Length: 115
Length: 111
Image 1 (cartoon, rainbow over the protein chains, first blue to last red):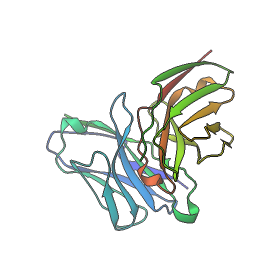
Image 2 (cartoon, one colour):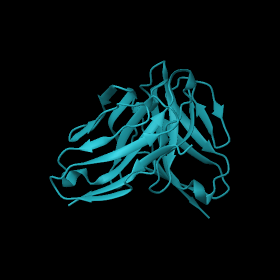
Image 3 (tube, rainbow over the protein chains, first blue to last red):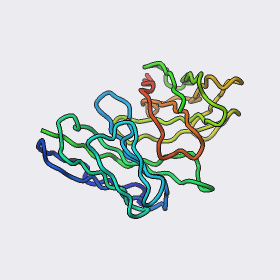
């Protein structure tokens, strides 16, 4: 199993550009979520999904869109990038129901710089 | 979800036990205590979780007070590789997708 895979690992954008951060997991997990981490700060939840077709907002959803068309994929879209969105983005997944172990599995992160 | 309070930083000597406290005085009856750690800029790593009984695994032990208002994560023999930020999180069971991370405790293990 590859676990949680994020692409790209690094990206530089100009203000106003749009882009999509990709996240894929091969563990058949129902839960998936996106976090951002600013320098010296803890993780903040952006959006999460409890299954295909279901998404909800986290702590800091403004400026981001998500969709969940398949169990495996949970892309994060930046509609119009702003310097305040410069951050490291982490995708995570977790089993649910009888398969829940209490563990949230994280990707390696995507480092985004908006100029 | 209940909030948690952790000291911002702690030091520990290599080979000694590291005891990381967490206060969660507003925890509700069906909420669990989860511990994660983040080494440098990697993605957080799950350590352990519990409801009211003490828990132990290959990485650490979790001691939860009887009133459940606080807990302690114990790394029995800290090594330099345990230097990391440790997060204490309170959440309902089966809430893995939307855990709310606070600021955590930065543990420095020193030779």
